[in-house]
Length: 108
Image (cartoon, rainbow, N blue to C red; front, side, top):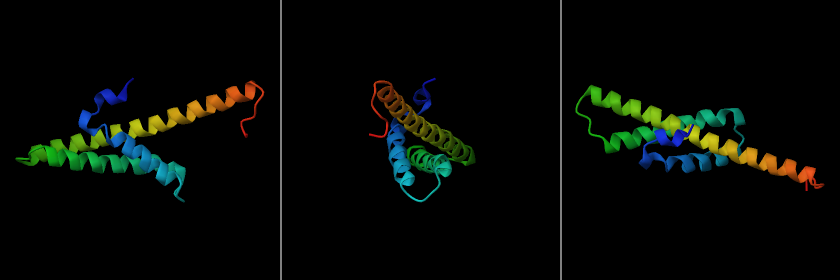
């Protein structure tokens, strides 16, 4: 399933932004288990701010609609970012394993 097909095109820029933020958090003292939660919250905030800026609100229904769009789009962007990170990790792991099979070492 291509999750990015559900993300609003103008919000796709948040995927690499969240990926970079995740890499920065990874180098901090914050436990890895919290990174997806932090990225999810950041994605929701960024997407909600974008939704409020780009959509006119004429009542509480419009505000709820913008909030819903912000939450869903933010979570999709964060999920795409975490998914991208996992793909890169898996590709690196596969490359390391193939180096081991070819007589090299993964530690070198």
